[in-house]
Image (tube, rainbow, N blue to C red; front, side):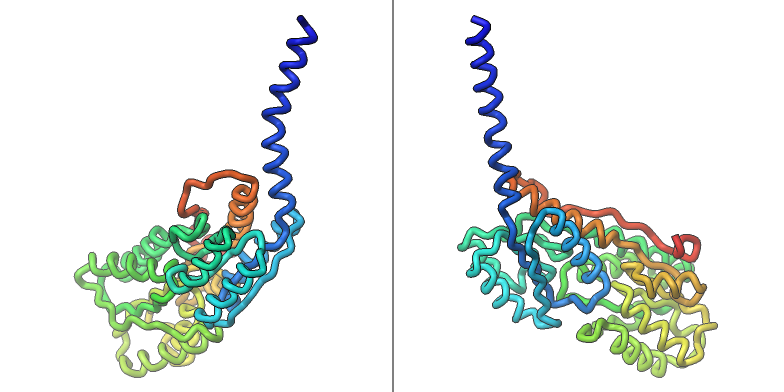
Length: 312
């Protein structure tokens, strides 16, 4: 009797353990991951790609990072290429709507695709990102409060990329809720070189068109590169003492340095880039192990950075 009970218990234990072992084995066997982005020149993208690579190394994955250097159309063909090569998973950092043809190819090949600070799409398993709604609300509210709800604001936006487009929409809403705030210019910079140089050039033109002291109260930028470009333009024009408030999003090292020095660049939102890369790798691992990921978007926490904590 005892032997029969022991045998049944062993069989039951094996029946539970076997699927788990198979799932773990499947995750371990998955070794080829492609990461595709047109935006590797952006510091934030570099940080979370590096973090993803570090996590991939611990999982024994072979990661191929493909940079299409600002060419979104090229990302489609590269997604198709790696799908036809039968990689185990694809990670994208680009608007899913703009590369839908490539995603359909991956779907037909039954290759899972994950967004790493991309955008939500039914063609993705999930998208790991920061909460753009809250980041934009925090920085726009910071601007509105600093200028006492009154003055002209220059906005730097980038609608072609969903995580950044969202930020512009929310900032617009915050500024519209302050009747004495006027959006003087809504600028989309060229990001081929990262965005600083073209943002500086465009800000120089705006400053020249509005030379009067007090004619520009603030610059709200949807990410740090335009904010840094605007800061350079303001300082080059000798208008840094007019009280023009600048905010960005990302809190990259250059931005933190400018904020810590007490320049016009006063605040930014710190995204946990390493956390995004790590969480994306974790999502890939869980999915390949057989888990169903229910969240279409996974948010990683952010934090407001000012001179008080820029050096933390």
